[in-house]
Length: 385
Image 1 (cartoon, rainbow, N blue to C red):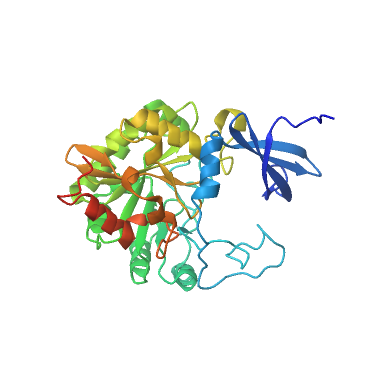
Image 2: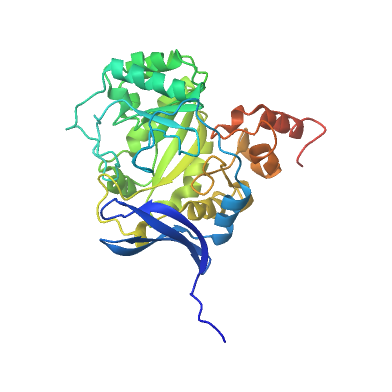
């Protein structure tokens, strides 16, 4: 006797939260027409199906090939009482240490971006006191020992009246890499601030610069202001001072996701730029009228657009990051004058996920095994050409 089948593949079970009431719900991971969905059921709000990947093959590769044993923090901060996500802090049930810590030092901002998930703005004037920030930094170090990456964020962190004291406090601790998450307005408009920033020790310091688009219309929709000139002025100062910079583009489907290649090429033209990050908008904070069917961009789709638009990277060059493989991907390239050579394609996956010493991190460039591999690759007798 033949049985009816469901019109999809059942892949796994997991837990999620209802998008309406935020209560914890059970969920299934389903594959249909090579797309991956999270199907949730809430007793109060019924079924909900959410796209989480538009490339089932890549999703399975992330979940099955790019995993390694989780690394524990040195200390957990909260006890297990109600379960995930209510005990987060990190609690003993958490499966990974903090690969990246975002330290929000202020709620104040000189923009009121329509896509801000933190709902920061000029009307919010609270700055965290220095003593509280010191305690937060100490908590991060207690949990991580030597944190890989700490990002100073907000609000707009450069507006905190004790910004340089906070930066000094972070530098005084064993943090390997510090990012300053900024919209660039103060760097562009305040020459004294930019010059003071340039006096800092450059080692392990990076400017994480908002740079969503080369198009004025897209910038107005995403940020509510004409920022093209400001962004270019900020970059001029960062280039002048040689401050290591990553361009950070918030992507909205149908608005600026066709500029991915242009932003990569623009970044390659800037001497100070060391990387480009793409992150999709999320249904949170000040975002209004978000329609998942029209606006959701998955990591797999961004990865494909990088390959299609950049003229530099292939799909195989953009690989999952093991600390959270299905939500984060990366590619490396070596800049040689006006040219760039993709590097990730030459790396054995075992360097990132297998064997002794493979770290769960987003800062692979600090991995000595990776450095050794690249040095061998580009030595005179081991050219990729």
